[in-house]
Length: 104
Length: 364
Ligand code: FES
Image 1 (cartoon, helix red, strand yellow):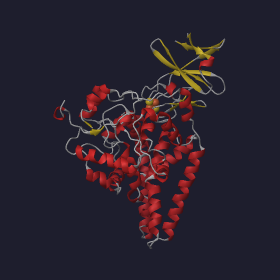
Image 2 (cartoon, helix red, strand yellow; image 1 turned 180 degrees about the horizontal axis):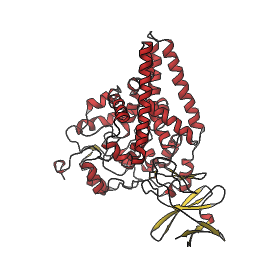
Image 3 (cartoon, helix red, strand yellow; image 1 turned 30 degrees about the vertical axis):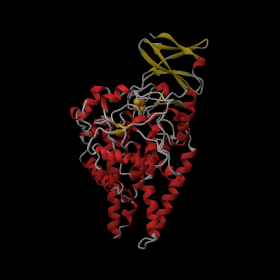
Image 4 (cartoon, rainbow over the protein chains, first blue to last red; image 1 turned 90 degrees about the vertical axis):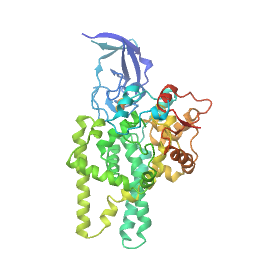
């Protein structure tokens, strides 16, 4: 059963953008999609462990700042070389202007 | 530490320098970045189709137009200027198209990047799968000896080899047999050191496609009993790559190796507009290495934004070569010698601990 962790305020992430969220020695990326929804993934690229929050969000894709590897942040799916391994994703809920992510 | 105490540079990707780079933390290290506010960087990273579509249409028009002229005048001296243009478009500007589309930053629309990437890879005799990975490594470990697969001039420099690069002969000599070897015998140990297992089969398939097109071209030449098909497909990689070498050599030559600050190992050179178009603004090379997700058309803006933190750019190619030449000559005897960049007073300092570790001798 997931327990919910307060990650950030809704206003902390611009639409079509991402921020970094560190918790319990781990790092996550919180995404604000163009349709207003929020998503959460692991914060480091699966290619070379670079912070995705420094990358570029285009629609539902995050592009890594190091080698431009791309993931669909809704599913974590890697979208071609140089990223081959999918990102882990986490459930998200928004309550009273706050974004929570669900961790096991 | 004197140079004799130092482990000699071993440029293989599976040798002593590789082990050393991994042990000292030079491999996959965190690189220096100039601070740029997130909002501004986001703006600079924005993708657009417009500039690259316009440039690509011009690129195709020049390619087709010059090919048509060369075919029309084939057999007379009038074909020479057409082949001159065709060669540069095919053998030189394909390099920057390959590069930018490989990063995926040229177009916003993904398939457009992929199509131009495949075409340009073919023109350059580069395996599109292999080179995607080798270039990723180049960005992770720029000019880190034993790690970077794309170091153009090694130390001590082989000046004859560097001069021959302008003819395209050397690259041609390795690129074409390399594709044949990959197509029929597979990848070698160095290639496997940076291409993940799940991608290797794709690299072999790509090589087979390239080889098939070359064989078809040779068959066409034999069938028509004419050299013309080869002048149009394959050979431009030889006679037209001089501009790619002219601009590309300046990216890193004579500068420091084994450092983790692109201001030290990479050069920005201001160029004439024609060369900049052929090169798709890759003359802003420090900027590109620091922020590889910024598209080529935004690099001049990025340059203005961070130049306070970078060494002064070379004002011309001529200036840059004049600066590099004496250093290359000195490296013939002292391979540790390099050109150290001066930073502007307002710049943040180098990470000296890495540089002292790896590069003891700097040019004054
Ligand atoms: S580190 Fe993310 S694509 Fe290479």
